[in-house]
Length: 111
Image (cartoon, rainbow, N blue to C red; front, side):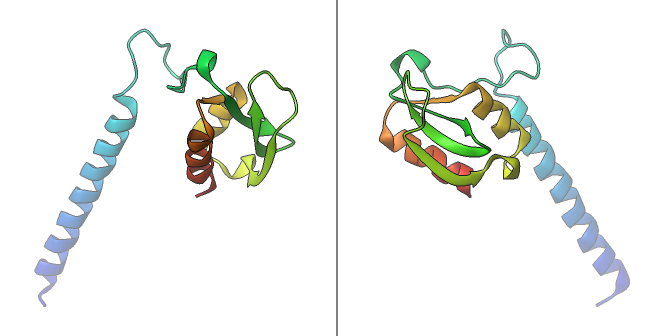
């Protein structure tokens, strides 16, 4: 294959990578509400109706029953292994309406 074809193909792949990265970043930042201060992360769950909260406990992700200070369940998910955004949300506590939401959230955090 000729060198110019390899370079053209590499250029197209690089342009696609840049476009994909820009689309991903705009998708993440484009969903913020205008009334939220910049840099503040807000979990969409309703804390008043939550049956459980997922937050950090002794450096790991833990599940708490609403209103309790001791975890119902501890996981082996090390908080230090999570993204900064996830750690910020965990510090505030992530409300979950039921066990199904807890399991989905733990699956997402553990992967």
